[in-house]
Length: 302
Image (tube, rainbow, N blue to C red):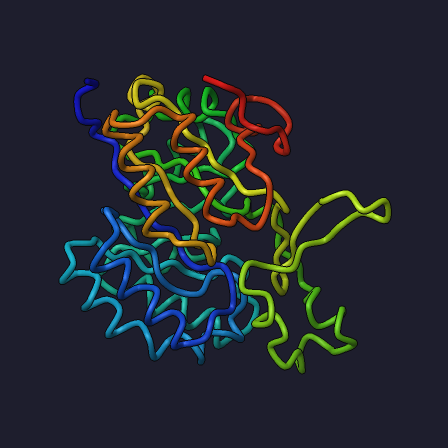
């Protein structure tokens, strides 16, 4: 039996426009049933959704913390209006740990600890060291980086915790235009929140019918689902402290339990991937970027 791993599990912010009821019920289950150490909450993709989700957070924070979870507030990746920038400023001024996804928010944090989120361009050791010097306590690098590249950064920034995006559709890009609004013949300012119709994002195929990408309002995601299932020793040798699971509509409690068994050495990667395949994922399994290959590459046997 492999000794219990020191690697923690985090649940990333919900990228999609879920209703208040859905968010409330989702986080209640996470609080009570999921073996998650840290939970990121808050709107990251589109500030127009915030009036729907903001009322949910006070009760959600209380419930998660009562369940033994550390709560981190994630901030918008592309704040574009005065209201959105003010929201980011207020969150960064709070004493709670926050995740910064847009570099302009650094000045609002005033040197206090923060999480550097995957929307920041952190592709080398110099950038990582700059952010650590600015207060970054945790770094979750962009999803395009390999585990080897992340390990190189982690070994030069011992004071920071490195977190790897391990599960979920990969966040690839953000746009000033809303794809969902355009698809429905609407303008971005009068989008009627059509993105709520696609709780895992809307799958996009090529003209040849090949599975390609997924859209989520102004966000582009991978069509496939990252299911990075490493040996615990791989993470320890690369100074990785935490794996991040990104919410999808599948049973995320089951996902978290499967990953916990993996990290504790109770089940091998092949078994965990089989468990994940039985949950009705919205796309094929991939882990190419972290293995140093094309992002759409399917996992190889360990």
